[in-house]
Image (cartoon, rainbow, N blue to C red; front, side):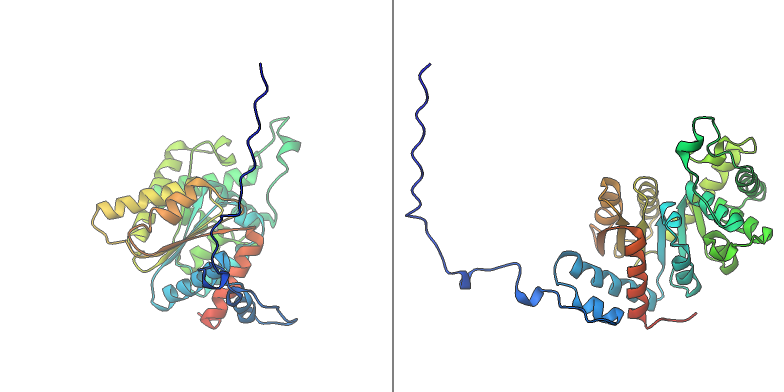
Length: 321
C-alpha cells in the first residue's frame, strides 16, 4: 500500500476578524468578585461574590427564601440522613424554632440517626467492622424504640414522623434538644417519613411490622401531599437525598395538581455534594417548568447549609420567633 499524502496546512491569512471592543461578551470586570477584608459580615461576603453562575444564583435563592418567609408561605425541607450525620441538626432546629421551616420530609435512615442522637448522643457505626459477623444494625435500643413507636402509631392512626417524635419526647432522652423529630413534636411542625422497606436497619429487628411500617409511612405520604398542596409561592429544598425524596416529591406534586390544587409558581433547590439525575429532574427542573425557579447547589452539606442559614438569617435580619 502506498503511503497517503499529507494535506497541505490550511492558510489562515484570509480569516475575517472583528474588533474585540464591539463583541458581546459574557464576562466583564463588573462581574468580578471583590476581596474580602478580615472580620467581614455575612452581607459583605455575599456582596463580594462574583456575579457569575452560583455566585449569582445563591444570593438570588436566599432572597427568594426570605420572600417566602415574609409572605407567610411554606418552606418545606426534604432530606437524607447524611445531613444529620455531618452535624447539621442544630441549624435546622434553629430554623424550626424561628418558624422559618414549616415542614420536613425524611427518608427512613433519618429517624434512625436522629433517634440514636437523641438517646445516646452518637450514631453511625462502622459498617465494615461489624458486617462480617452479622452485627450491623442490630443495636437493641434503636430497634425497640423506633419499631415500638411505629407499631403504636399504626394502632392509633398516626403517621410515622409524629409517632417517633412523640416517643422521643415521652422518653425524655438526654439529647432531645439535638433531635429534629423531638423538636418538631414539641413545636407542632409536621415531619413525614418516607420508607423503602428493607433499606433501614430497624426492618431486620424482631419488633418490625411491615404492616405498621406501610400504614404509617403511607399516611405520612398523604400528609406530605397536603403540605405540597400549599406550596404556591412557597419553597421546597431537597438536601442530600439523591433518589427517594425527589421521587416522593414528584409524585406528591402530580397528586395535588391532579386534584386541582394550583402549585405552579414556587421555588425549589437541591443541595448535594455531587450532581445527580433525579434531584435535577424531579426537584429543580420539572416542577418549575411552568413557573417559579429551581436552583442546584453542589457542595458539601457541612459547608453549604451553614452558609445558606447564615445568609438567610442575615437577609431576614435574624428574625425571632
